[in-house]
Length: 604
Ligand SMILES: [Zn+2]
Image (cartoon, rainbow, N blue to C red; front, side, top):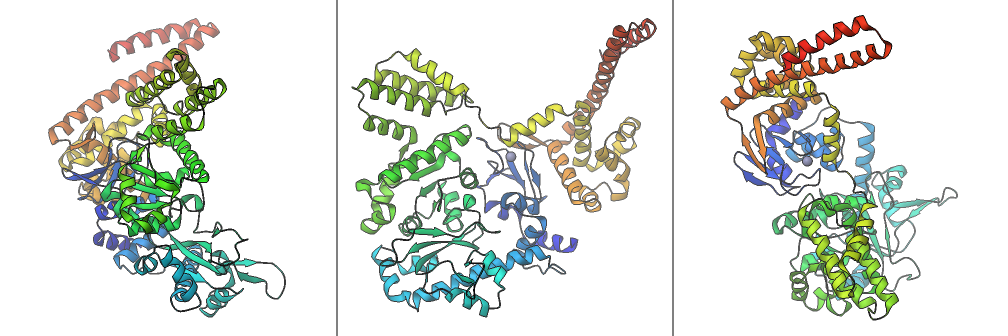
């Protein structure tokens, strides 16, 4: 197995892999970006091409290309291994665990279903009625092929029989969500999608994981207009973004994403040249979906386009509220894109592709949008409605966190605007906003959680980790320190330092040699320690620490360690003194006090 991992690593560059997910900027010998794993405004995530590892100085996540893929796609190691093996053309031996096999069969069934329905569209019964409809909606043949639109014909078991013939087991077809199980009768299973236009939904890697299906024109309109694949082992609707595999590159390049409502809107926008467009298919925008988008662009660069009918307006409000609640702290508010005459994106593109581009150019801040909506909705001359405006607006503004001067200033500015327009005292409004804000406690992000954990860790442990990391950054230092009496004495207190000091000469003082001797997680820990000790991270700048500074740091840490050790001992003595006082044990108290004064002198 290890040789396969090494083979893969030699064929894939981590910079390319990470670059598929986040926008990397060159920073000296490294690449940096805003971390895809935690909320942040300035980049503390870096990729080291030479070592082929990534590391975030904010949340502490780090590792090699396997760890990265596992984290970002929520995969097990084996799944990541398989994907990277495929990508690099490395053959895996003895690799066939049952669960993965089942998942693969489901994915294969979905791929065959896509092919089957495409054929029905271009050559079968969909050729006349569906192709005509799609072209009337303004879609070109290229777009239809690119998005792999298909047609599920009428009938109860077209697809079911086709997949059985292809050798799929009923459980795989069922697991893919393609058929429905009546649980009784001779025709127990039947096709879920019948007489519908099929839009395959792909994951970020471009694999079909489910479908969104629209009633065929002239079909049974009493049924739901759109139905989607149910939750399966591969399809989780809260994490799906329609069009993401085709849009991700463009989102990074243009550094913004256009979020539209429907599948047709996505395709139309791509056709009009806005390839950075996706849709939250079949759900109101979720936190998970927003998190996915943030991998490709800064959160402030999300432009939302909603149909301007009342359902569209409500969707806009819901999504934006969700956004404000969960993501405000990570940047500024998203923009809203308007289309004239209540059109959706698909209609706009059909009539005049440039009108969509213009609308996107003229997008405006969501807060501006909300504000104007409120003034439209209520009559401010009517006292009750005026009250309503104040209530709804303070509710929106109170979502803005006080986590940065910019946000606080924004909050105050919008509160004042309200006071001014409604002709009430500023202080009154500011008080209401303050009260409402205090009831909303923002969620802690990973970074804050990590910090909390660190606060509870003992300082001496942290210092030993740092010392261990320093030794790994410089072979000569490692060699020298391993001989030192003071280092050897404290090494036994820390698993990693002990490993480094005791194994150094056996691995020729090489980090990669050492890593290859320990298990995966220990290896990653070692890499991480060496990175954190070897690089300075300050205000978004990552720089390598020079050798002299590394040596100076070692001395500082060693002496700090001794001081902290004494302090810890002092704390124990203080505790004992208290106990002795309580129990009236004068004898012990005397000894302890002497010990205490002797040690406090040492600490000084
Ligand atoms: Zn991070």
